[in-house]
Length: 260
Length: 325
Image 1: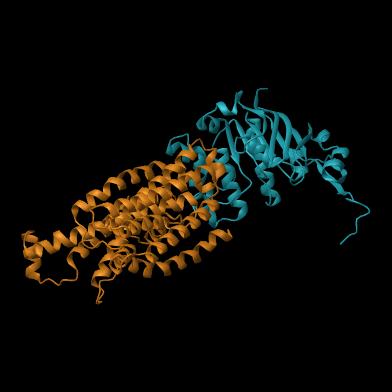
Image 2: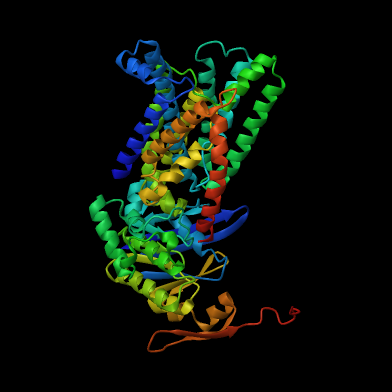
């Protein structure tokens, strides 16, 4: 499989502190990689540094085999599409216009046709004419994902695409991203829902304090040991007909601490 | 296209009213004489005094409307306008300084100073825009720049050498298009035309900024360049409008707001209709300044502020919806 995203020794520094330290990771075409870790582990920082949105202190990034620095803005956009965690939209533009922003490389008619297809795929095609600020959070999240899908980029990067959504919407969004991976794209998602990440991703990369703790198949990446060490959880992933379930309880952080 | 046709018709009507009505009341016979013979006394009033004045108001309003739409798109904020980033304040300060230095009598010097002040502030903002991407940061710098420009203007007033200079500076800062003639309009177009062209170039970037800086940065557009171009275009337009008519607030704020709903809130498609709306607003405001009975003719900047301030409050009220969303 061809690596679409290659990170080598990626380090990001804030002040004197390494918020991301020496991360080496590949994501191949046709693969969906889940980036998991506790709050502050460096997931968003990793995505932003990988896409050139954040300066890195050390390390190299290659997109579709070429160094990130060698790509023009247009070339970078053709390789990588990004869905930030922030879902704020400045103006009340119709959903179709927002989704069509992803298809800027196409002509206006083709772009809008593709945007409508993506909205329909995410089951919000009937809301194409509605202003995004008049929508519920879940509807808006789907419209913004439709914008990402409309980029048709080789690498789709989605930061917490399903956070805060109802279970059905979460499954739909991860299903559609998974379908893009099956169709040949490289997909990277972050998630705090470990069971969902384990269910949809081929591999999981576990970040802890800015370092890559483990990369591997979901069962191995979320072993009892990793759950305890990284997430302070006592438990395990259990297989079920509908996908993995996380059965865990919180480990006491410090038995001697006084509870409040 | 229907919107632009409607706005063009409204502008033509506003210009027509502005030429027909004025401080001097003409009889039907005088109108007929003026239309038949532009060199007649009535013709001079209609086409030598009122027409260039109305055109100056329309041109200034168009520049401010367009600059406001660009600022709002750039800062993703419906309350932004050239005044928010300090461009108007520095333009007014530079003009006041030129008058206080005794250069006001030299033709074109005050106007060039106004343009220079706007470009200086625009340059600072452009440098900051290249360094800081968050609109909130730019607004904060703009507020500081505007406060400094206002304070320096107050200092110039404070140290004003004579009451005549004081009155001259005050008249400039309160805004007016009285006594503008056709060559003035031609001179204003020299900075306004490239300013408008820069805004048109940046339009596509403003649309992409709807989804935030990060999404725009990865859209394939040269966002760093477009951001600087947008600031430069808005500064040129604002400086040229201050050079033409003094400091006039609220048109840049109100015009984009009036048309945004008709173009599906698209920041790029808001630009041209905003220019039309600004032109209509300022033409009508100047007409009001002339025909509202008063001992002294009302200053244009005063009229726009009187109507604009309540509108500002209304926009803030409605904007709360998007902040809650």
